[in-house]
Length: 292
Image (cartoon, rainbow, N blue to C red):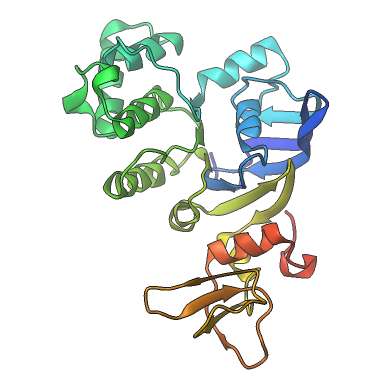
């Protein structure tokens, strides 16, 4: 599959719950590589990922995943055979061992040959660093290890589309670095959508980024373009600037401010997080880049 070929096409998709929109006319395209999905709590990220995982159907709009229509029975089945999904709150049977749980998911993914399935289960457990913990029951594992069990289940069968909902929750800094290495490898030749609150994960991993806010796509483009939203809008001061939209004391003792700087202020190089915060606070449209 070429890097320019789209694998996910979302066109004007809307989903509502109890008369309130969770997604409102969402449109975007995904291609092979890692795309980050950012947004505050309640933005509709989990709803969007559940739509892409074929767990729920949109109320309106069109959706194509891996060249298939999830609105049809055969299309949904074909997608699920090539899809890996890590939900925000994976459901575990606590009495299963890590190996038994991943093996159970492999059976659901129609890996029927026992010897080949065993080899694949051991491969993904090794990939996520749990080979030596495979015989432990899930109830005896730490939160970070349980998250890695869920990731192993998501990548069973080498899926072409991988949907990850807050996968770094519960991971310590060393585990997160390990996770970044893994996701970077997984993004070679397949499509990965990574929902996260960690802007540093997006900076480190993602070729593109989508920002969702109150069910609407506020931005989609390159991480550098999101960072550019804050160009000229970040400055340093010796005291907290009360006119700033946000400001905090750094480890060096100075204050980092975001907003509209005074004319004489010392500008700082913006980060992706700065651009994200300004975008959500309503940065002028001219500063937000082109939605594409």
